[in-house]
Length: 303
View (cartoon, rainbow, N blue to C red):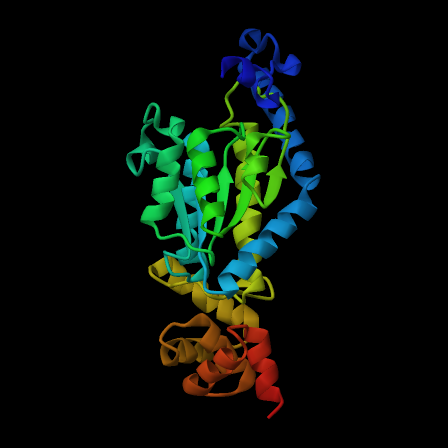
């Protein structure tokens, strides 16, 4: 295994940061920043692949399936972070996007030694969640060879789920387990092997793209406004009313009125104002328009 790791791009010595331990604080920060600038170029190079992966996710959602991120260490934590932000941001059911990490919930905060070394645990964790052919599984590993992640990906493929691999090296073992690969090769890390840095940054960028684009494509966004948020605290109540105002140009009194009448459902409130209908009719239009605000308003105009 050590010989195999030494050949990975993510495990090479970064010549640009040699002697970094002798630099001033400011110069260290500059070197890190210079390396981080390479991440966006690596992600840009695989945008068509990211779009194709997103289409697999959209297809899963449209057939009633779920999305699972599977990773270990930093990769697992990033998947959990992205999944956990979908319900408050897009109003999704918590089961729709899930993050699974080697070692379980304890590993979110603390390193669980050896958890990533067991492929059978990755497979069993998918079985526990009842993964089916309707779902999509995204395996995340900087090396592309983490046994836990590979085990989950292989099991997902056996179950007929769509399988996407996300790594930071070319031609990794993930290729044999995935329907589609995302290989964001960011080069050697600032500190050898510390893949929480550039590799982790690239992964976070890509996960943002996958879920945000998928949510836009299934009607969770109107224009560029987050219209399916759940106003569960004071900040989000204020944000929801501001979004209604921005989407419709309505005054505060009208915004407050439709917010109350819609039970705080932002999309319903927007359709009420734009289509000039009550909450019940707005709900019907949204259902007919597959949850898209724009389609609901267009349907109202056709009558």
